[in-house]
Length: 127
Image 1 (cartoon, rainbow, N blue to C red):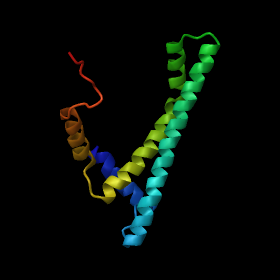
Image 2 (image 1 turned 135 degrees about the vertical axis):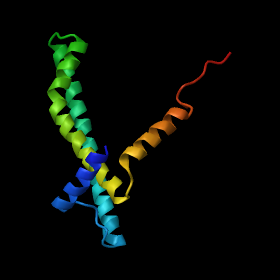
Image 3 (image 1 turned 120 degrees about the horizontal axis):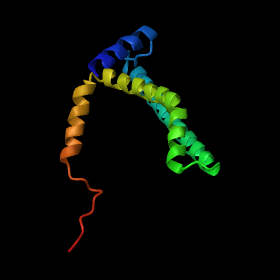
Image 4 (image 1 turned 90 degrees about the vertical axis):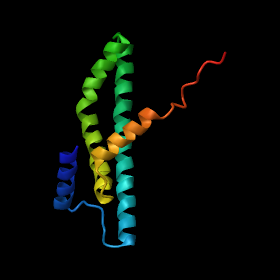
């Protein structure tokens, strides 16, 4: 992850795509713009999922087993959903780099936090 974060930082500078640090107003506008771009990419991931579900339904309608149909649909969207996920990652890395957060350390710390907290969604049976 460190290598990809360094690559993204350099790439974004080369392309002129880094988040502005010129002033508060320009940083605010740049952060908001990049946040909107990130959410747009997340929506494009949703579109690929929708496409997979629609393909699955179509395959099932034409006689395929549901599991087999879904596997076929996943293969059809694999490349495009990979591109959309990469776009999301690129925008996320912009935020990590802007705030000077080590993505790898942040990720592992968050996963440890999640692992150690009590899952509030699981309801224990009462006696």
